[in-house]
Amino acid sequence: QGLAMAIFFVTLSYSVPLSAAIANGTPSWSKWDAGWWSTVGLEQVGSWMGSWIVLAAFVSSFGQHVAELFEDSWQLAGMADTGMLPAIFSKRHPLLGSPWVAVLFQLCLILLLVSFDFTSILVVS
Image (tube, rainbow, N blue to C red; front, side, top):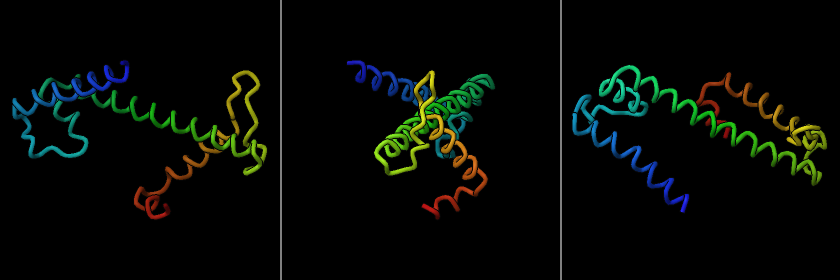
């Protein structure tokens, strides 16, 4: 029931403002491209709406990234527990129980990859 409500409200939160923006016609929907949701909010409502849309997108992306980082750190810890990786990756924080070495390793890896151009990262994979 909760999942159905979430789907309903997410659909509503996109379809209502999108319908209003298309009906208003400024800017023309034919010019929309990736990243234009904040521009539409800026031109339809004002600068505060454009700023809120950018902030919401940032918080959403950050949350997805952190969730993936911690999920992957538990995978590294599990692989270390079974002997597939060095045992250092399974070292847990004494108070929180989180695999802090695996999290730190991923953070260093991400900081290294951020320095590359996005297309060169795609070529690597």
